[in-house]
Image 1: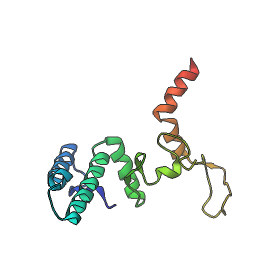
Image 2 (image 1 turned 135 degrees about the horizontal axis):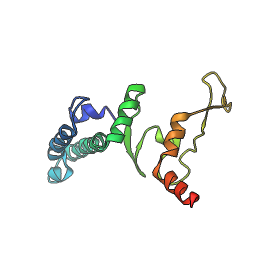
Image 3 (image 1 turned 135 degrees about the vertical axis):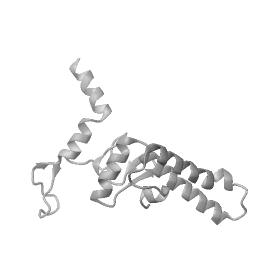
Length: 148
């Protein structure tokens, strides 16, 4: 999947209203219901794909937190948000174990050094991962119950 800003045809500093208007334009043009009567199956599939991409882009760019994380990851790497079978997630979330449920690849609080071999642990803490886990809603709710 490409850049969400390119998908919607907006600038990176677009306001929420501009994001919403761009999504509405794409939704009106590419919504699967508008192409249901089309005899060409390839055209229907292409319109559905474009609608999903616009929907994914809107989902990320309309929420301030998701947009900030997307922009941060876009600057640092080529990862982006995508729709998964279990819901919405960033492409790196499977390795971090975010989301609901268990068994999403685990993830360790410890980061291995770039020169270390497989299985080696340098002992440094991945603070970004730790901060995200500690500030999750479920963690904070459980912490509140543990204190009572």
